Length: 269
Image (tube, rainbow, N blue to C red; front, side, top):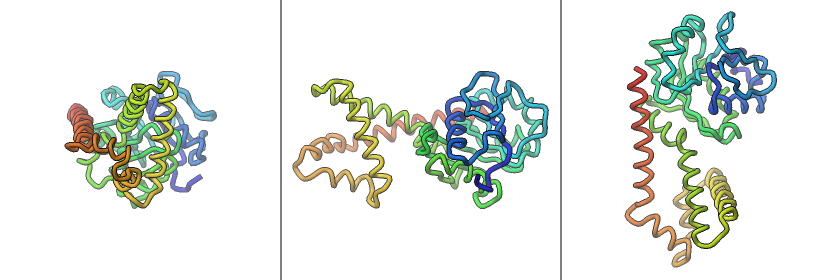
């Protein structure tokens, strides 16, 4: 156990993302399952030892609360939740597009931290963006300690950039999966059996990402190292690089995701 981790936690809603985080917390040993209460009217799949209740328990508020419902459900839960957690030491929110000020208007907490994880946190290889409390404060240390087992953790300096983080790393796995699917489909179009092409594409992306994560060079430099002059890789890169086609496509993709987050934030104010 890490000393900075809260000794009692409520999870309000436990869908795919909150469930992935909880599973990794328990698996890594950073959180004792006996200290966690999941408040969810459904039947979420939970690690052994985690308490599950359908409605708020009739007891004192915990040290930390994480809100994991859909953003549009915030006002549905705020009325009952706010008085029960008044003065909570740390309020965490994984609600896309919901700003700290919007949360502060609904809940009285000593510290609020927005959290943007992605699904690979379930494997301990996710990306987590944080914004809110001072990273060097007690609450900041607690948030960092909780997120550390999930993967790469980055504190964001400006809340205005949080929508970009959501678009890049929060939504990013979806875009990467599309790329893997397209890479496999392209291999199949060249004659490979579809299932074999998918296995090769998945392994190629996995291995390349691991190399990029452990390299001192940038991905652009690594790409040039693979692509010898006049070789087959260079010919393929020429297609991707022509008129900055790939970069322009991804800028448009992230911009669309970011703008949707802005719309969600406006709706939650």
